[in-house]
Image (cartoon, rainbow, N blue to C red; front, side):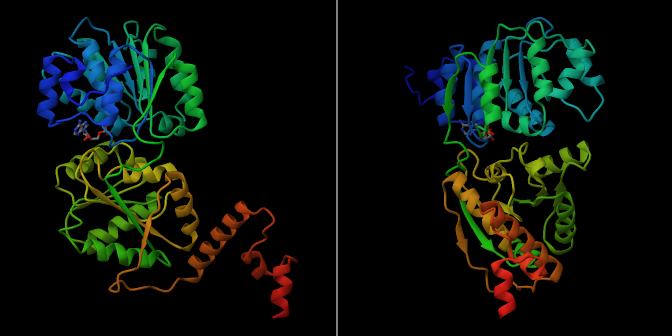
Length: 430
Ligand code: AMP
């Protein structure tokens, strides 16, 4: 049985690591760290169900650093795979922070930039590699990265890696690295593909959960506004952001790049403070610049699509505003995980239109938490809905009803008059 510790000193970490923990300002281990660190240190394979904001990164990095201990040879001994460049960089930062008092050499390996500087760093010798699967495989296949000495493999955000189609690369990597190794898998949610991967990849794993799958961090206050249309959403956003003091560091999440760009342009014209936008069409440098400016409090509002939502490690975000409801319901948890991280309190506000009522209910089902619905502040102008938008909303609502009841023919079809349903005969009689 593992005795639960409450102090970092109980983990038998060396003094270099304890010093880095103090320097990082971590006073007490978080629940996932209390569970994971002793198990990983004891050499177990482990599956951790944990969302960002729980301290899961340090939960595996600390025992990993303890294991790798000091610089040795030229070839890496630990590999951490993560789905996005942003996450790789974020993981690397945590590794750098926690290994500050050791001589360990860590390297972030990711695509989108030329491989030259990464190859040079590998040649100088590296103990820990944090990589996206694609670039890692490229460097391996070119013969630049030797895998013979690897004895620990971590898959972080495994669910996102599956979503992003990294399975073939991961399988290929598993084929080429030494069989004798410790494996760790972390995932915010546990869909079937991740469960299957864990069965293939982990040997007699210990399973730990930071909080039940897909449960938002308890430090986040969640509420929502129902708004009739896009323009009214914009008006409410504008109204909220007028309060510069309360809404001091905000991420606005939107579903598509196009809406992200439009909202960004609108906010630049209408809202106080520096505004930036990140999505997958922005170049790597632009994304990194915006993120670090946001981190350093030089940017007040960051508009982002879901692609941006995973890799963002920014504490003290005052508010997450979901301009729309994500259709991948787990993304809701990831989006609002940007606020209320670790010990900070945060607020997540969701805007939903009549066609999104359905998705809000599904999210409440998934998280097991009710989202408080608030009335629109009286200062916000309620716009009328254009015919085009109304049609889109009606169609979406129809599709949802059909999903729930395959026999439902739909109000939209009724209006078109092409179907002979009870609905249409009733309408004709009227
Ligand atoms: P993560 O869940 O790994 O994304 O971590 C979320 C945030 O919590 C990061 O900014 C970490 O630096 C921070 N953090 C990790 N462990 C602790 C701890 N024990 N105490 C306070 N903050 C922590």
